[in-house]
Image (tube, rainbow over all chains, first blue to last red):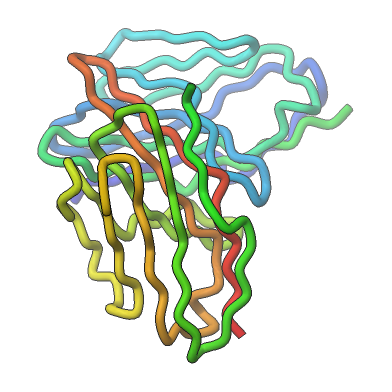
Length: 110
Length: 114
């Protein structure tokens, strides 16, 4: 069964304290892995798509990496405005379906 | 422009009402999606349209009826909803161009069924 698992469920960090969020996947034929940021009551904001093992992408304080079984979202020196839920999702080769993980709720304390 | 728009932003309806949610994108994306999201849960896929044809229906109750009038518009018709259908309804569009895939979401419609 195709599955996406994110950990931890929630993470509290002090401002400036770097950390990583994990997204592990078990799927048959990965087409792409997405990372999104979602603020309460709003639609998810697209961050990155990763396609193959070894790929890395960066945006401001965020860096996403991909291996054959998991992806990491590294947050360097976070600020309170980085507080949000971060969602990981995968699209398979066979169709347009996109499978989401349950998300990690990140809270950055000033 | 990476915008997906949704109307209305908020909707309150009774269980006997009929209403529609609307979604629009002008990015030329070939696939459009409806998701339902409950508080503190991830988006839950409902329907996918590909080239204006329904390609995925995730066993959604018939009180939800999708429609794709053209490549830029997506509607979700609502009828005889239940209070448990109250949620944030999200529209998204995606495009695969060679090796590049993107999916953008709209801001959502907050639906309350009374």
